[in-house]
Amino acid sequence: KTPLWVGWMSNWKYAGATPTSPWRCAMSLPRTLELRKSGDRFTLLQNPVKTLESWRRPPLRIANQPLAAANRALEGVNGKRFDLLLRIAPGDAAEAGLKLRVGGAEETRVGWSRERGEVFVDRTKSGNTGFHAEFPGRHAAPLPLRGGLLDLRVVTDDCSVEVFADGGAVVITDLIFPSASSQGLAFFSAGGEAKVVAAEIHPLAK
Image (cartoon, rainbow, N blue to C red; front, top):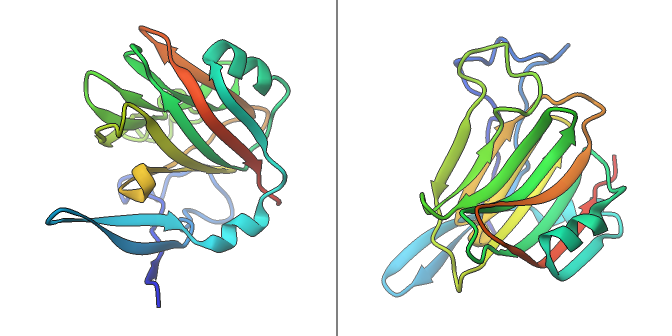
């Protein structure tokens, strides 16, 4: 059988201070585990269980669009819970990716940095971050691009973002506490032009 595991979505530094009630903390999505072999190297892959796909609603699809056109396609798309499959060609951009739970001054950024060669989740402006000094921040992991393309699967819930990059070889899981009204989505790039090669944005049933 395929091994499964779940992770604890919190940190002992602020687990007792998260702004939730009556419970505190939660578990990640259940994930499958498998090994990918490349030459003499093995990589552990984590990906959401197949069952998650049964919660999907019909997707919005975007293909081969510059970011400005892709963002026009996102106008009016709002929500808290999505399963997003995204392939971006960063081109000459220094950073490129997706902004989640956007509203007012709030946003959570999921993207890739050329200078640092890493995928990241930036929750510094994600909403309520003031309950502990070490909660706001930018969390990152090394990610070389394959064929110049950034491949991400991003699953968002009311207060979480789970990022699976390169087929699950790199995973970042973060809590966020945005305002209920912050439900926008937008693509972004900085320092150059990027392109959405393919995107599937599946709202998730409650």
